[in-house]
Length: 165
Image 1 (cartoon, rainbow, N blue to C red):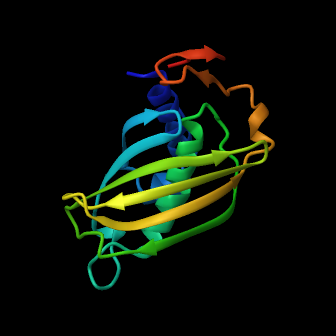
Image 2 (cartoon, one colour; image 1 turned 90 degrees about the horizontal axis):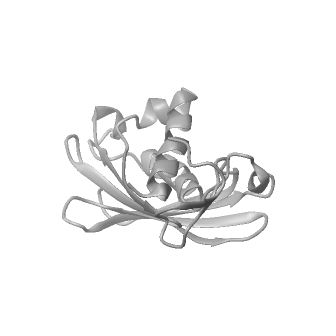
């Protein structure tokens, strides 16, 4: 398992251990792959993820855009992933029903000293784009967190900081 994937999963575990929104809304989220700046996920859709018409609720897509954008920042070695300054989503087609699997790829499109920009593409089980979101985060103060690490370019190794499992 790559160092970037281990680290990103550790940050996700800290979100779940906090017992907040993420733990309640999508405890079944699975992180499949993480390289610096890109993370792939899936979520099995259950009844709590649906709107009144029986398809995925837009609020789920926005919540996932928030969380997955944060984990894209984490994939670059940031343990504290900052705070949201802007977020939005566009809905292309129905994203699924109970029992379907929603897939997502979160990408860190840019990161400076104070702001990080992410995009999350959501696809259904056959690979059709169903929605996409964007998320801007203030990361200025989180850049100096002592739990941060620096990865090799491919994300396979930690080259600065502690690689704790």
